[in-house]
Amino acid sequence: MSAFLGPIHHWLFKKIQLFEELEKDILTALSNEASKELIHQLSDTIQEKYGHFIPQEPLEKLIDTDNIHGWLQRQISIVETRQAAMIKILLDKFGKEALKTIENVYEEQGKQLGLEAFEEKKVSNATFLYKELNNYLLEGMPCDNANNVIDAQEEKVQWQITNCLHRPYWEHVGMEAETMYHLRFIWIKAFIEHANPNYTYIVDNTTSTQTSMHYIQLK
Image 1: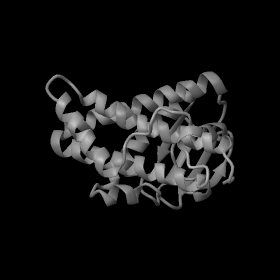
Image 2: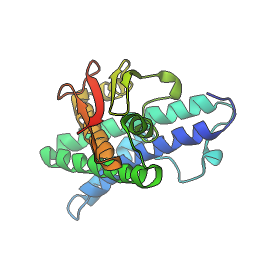
Image 3: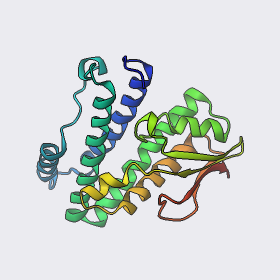
Image 4: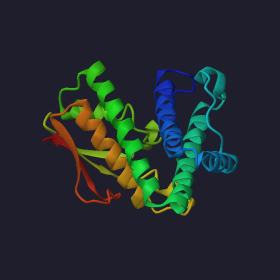
């Protein structure tokens, strides 16, 4: 990654912000008259422990220009760990009701961003869909190369996760990674099917683990 602030850094920062928006949307969705104060307290506690939300400022005003790569990596670590911790505490306190809400938030963001890609990019095939997916979905630093594309054709893209970057964050807070894989599946499926309704997203097992095979393919 370049040592000077450029388009790739803004591209990555946008994905970090989108991931953080998931957490904010989850908190908003679970807040009602009875739980609003408790949710606010939980969020404050988690932010104090794992890091605060990113200020709504341009990247140029936030980033350490002497350590661009390190700053961005740090933000990824913060947002991933904090969201895992927040989901864990919400599930511990509210159970299945919270999980359903979290699933809905993930699905809605995937849907809306998929529609954005549909309207702005006119994604016409599986390879284009895979490229656009990676313009929205947080998957570590560009140099991490977490996915290995095995087959890339217009009708189908097949890939395998060679290095799951997310599991360590979830395990760090005592959360089972299967929930994370489940939520990511919901998000990706919603994104793909709204970016191009002719295509869908399939994983070769229900847990979407590191050894699973992933497909974007025609329905």
